[in-house]
Length: 201
Image (cartoon, rainbow, N blue to C red):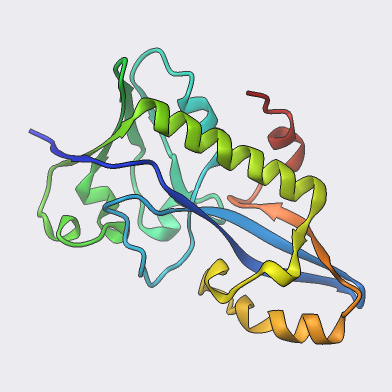
């Protein structure tokens, strides 16, 4: 029997790095990080992301499907220890993600990471799940079109991998005219802007 966990679908939009093209051309890379129950928020390899296109596709499933809804920012899931897709199913009221613990142990929080084997079934209320994904996509669309306001960036808005948070204050001081930073990329790598902007709900 699966280990069942009822949880809301939660995420954080975070920045992973800045790209300095020239003195006045700085861009930022964004990604959506899982923040629901069972995910290890203090994971050492802080590169796990939600795949935006797979999430949108999950809103439309009519039969069981396998999907890498969670992956590495580079696009190769096994780089963060994810070695199998999630089994995605649904009922009228709920969305189910079945994670084989053996293949997701590297990203799970305690006590789930210590369970020898089995299936962890994440149960998301369907309407909340849908609303959260739509809100995520619309927020990313806004950032793609308008940029990210640098004065609103806080250290907790960054992943720990590249230590980009340490650059915020120096960017503000050295580029006082810079109010918004354009989005270079949405992770996972290859998740292009045009495709995200085409989504309508």
